[in-house]
Image: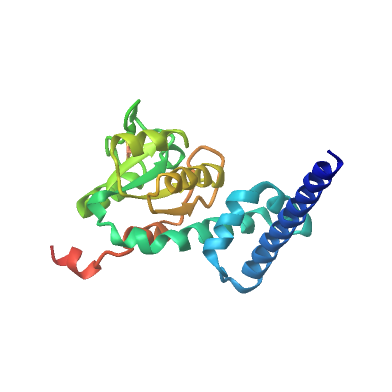
Length: 221
Ligand code: SF4
């Protein structure tokens, strides 16, 4: 009996050391990324983020890294491990998920329980133009009132790749939902948060839209 407790104690101690090492390793990867702007061993980095998100975030913020940098490193790491597979999917099999807070405050669109907010292209915000241009490329566009709607889009529209724009919490949740069902995903963080008339860098969004797409071919067609 005493021997069994000794073995259990040794295993528990080994697991504790291993977890501590992995968390410290994850913190180091964040610091290297912050200093160099590069994401070493992104697959392992992404796995450490998934497994030890809270302790890594806690330590990194205690060290003094701005939470905005932390968020953008997480999204960039996730983007980098998904980008090659995302590029392989043609736009007609991709979906773009926008947050409802990008709309004009005067938006007349109604909420559908299946498709989210149904833009009527009133022209009060940039979504009208964005929707028209991306739909012409073959994309399906969804404006969602929250991260939980992502599952409905995946079940209903069955896209093979997803481009998401959102605040960090919704984007991270959406990325993880897509990763669980092995759908390649790309994310763009909002520049401002606050739930009303938020902003995004549309140039960055367009770069993602055209990933794996021949721009010359789309111009001539
Ligand atoms: S363009 Fe669409 S999303 Fe924007 S305010 Fe008008 S209906 Fe709403």
